Amino acid sequence: MSSVLQLQRQFIDYTTSLHNEGYLDNQFTELQKLQDESNPDFVTEVVSMYFEDSDKLLNNLTTALQQRNVDYKQVDAHAHQFKGSSSSIGAKRVTNVCAHFKGFCEAKNLDGCLRCLQQVKQEYIFFRNKLEALFRLEQQILQAGGSVPMVE
Amino acid sequence: MGVAADSQFHVLAVDDSIIDRKLIERLLKTSSYQVTTVDSGSKALQFLGFHDDDEVNSNQPCVSPNNSQEVEVNLIITDYCMPGMTGYDLLKKVKKSSSLKDIPVVIMSSENVPSRISRCLEEGAEEFFLKPVRLLDVSKLKPHMMKTKIKETHEHQPQHQENNQEQQHKQDQEHQEQKNALEILEEVESEQQSNGSKRKSIEEESVTKQNKTQIQLWPICRFD
Image (cartoon, rainbow over all chains, first blue to last red; front, side, top):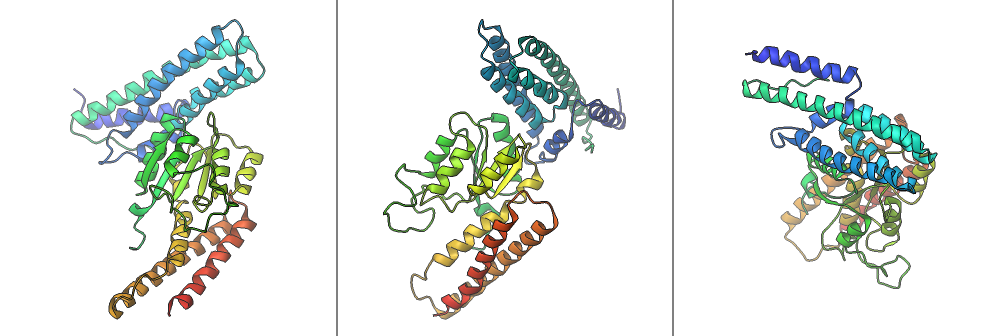
């Protein structure tokens, strides 16, 4: 069984790599700053909201692009929403793909849109998996009686 | 009226995104403000007690701000891009309303569009924040809310004769409030001069100068 120190080390390394690889940006750190004793679950709450919201948005995007006559304004609206929420969470790579997605919507480029949809789904799954791994690490630290280090 | 404890400031936050609502609520609560969040401009107007015929150029007698509202709101912070009524539409409606026009309005947007920013500022928005909004942005809100408190104190006339000791203490307290507010306004002014402010600097300077004059006149009017 890993010691608290080992777990904390792991946590720091993992968070750092997520930032370095562009999965997370400073906005995620800002979210962590808003968490305190009176709101100990703030980050997990927001992230859960984000996952729920994103699942819906991805479904909407998929449906909208399956229509015979694609309504690009509608697709763009969904992409815009997804970009916004991803940016608010600090999901950097997802946000960037959404930006490209919007470009293809403006150009009414179906091919581009479909490729972006695939890409954004992929990035979102990566992001979700990594964040869940991070939260698991956090839980392990807390259960071992340690505190979760702040990584700037 | 007590000295402005931050918990007395009530902010109405308007955003169609559930995540951004949660975020802005936490940011504002962390800064010790009371918060109400709504998901649309029309719900915001409903909350503010807005009536369609409530325009500035109507023949209604002049009433002090917040008179016709159910709840007092000291600042409105709204997203720009919303379905139906945009934040810009909401801003216009608030500024055209005789009962709501003195409530400071702040706009948030994920897009950095200069023409959008200047349009909002021209329409009377106090600040324009780029999303994602952070604690540093929220720390800029207080001076705007303080200005409305100063205005309110200035407009209220003494209701009845209190005993001398109470009256003196009250005057001292209010004088201290004015000094504090003046300090904050001076801070804001020097901040504006030193960093690249998102606000239109010329207009802001004249607004703060106007308030400063009001503050300087106030003690003279009251001692009767």
